Image (cartoon, rainbow, N blue to C red; front, side, top):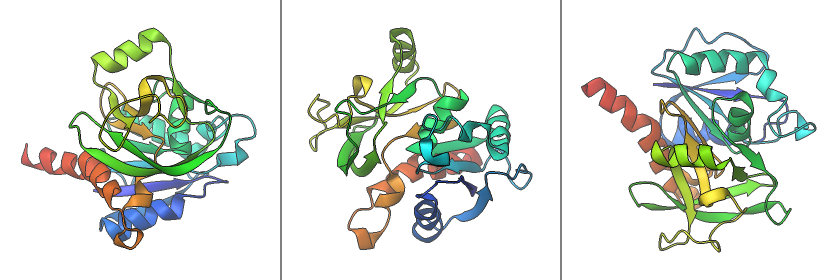
Length: 227
């Protein structure tokens, strides 16, 4: 499996992502400039990653300009063909702006940038400690969309406390239903606000992020091969 990491003007977590995938998870990584428009080196078994940062300075709206980059147009088509796409923080915002994921990311409830470790958990109930760093990470969607996410099991991670309790106090940004990450119905496009790439190194004293990559991507590849 190859990972292509798209770099936009203003991306500032791209090298964190490249380092985590290449050095901590021993994966092949290709860096992709946003003006390029060639994904011929990638098959639908590979993954395109949209890293965090402030693409185009977030001057219009988070992810709104990056959505029109040539590489993003190719990424949209790649996803439609069944290719894996993963967006983190600003990457999540870009996925929502592009229509690859439903909902929007709004300004945090207290109108403040939040940078700290938080706890999240998925359907398997495993509690993970993952860093966040965002000012517009409050996931929001209308009631119909939220119900569809629940019914289709598209909510991949929710904010919780260290014991796994999903409470208002554990919600760092006011996200609806404590949503930290979602996927599309086809389960090949994933987006989340927390930064798993910042929790992959033994030197940082936290490798919970490795579990996320392994569950969402590496495990998927092994199961596909066995199938």
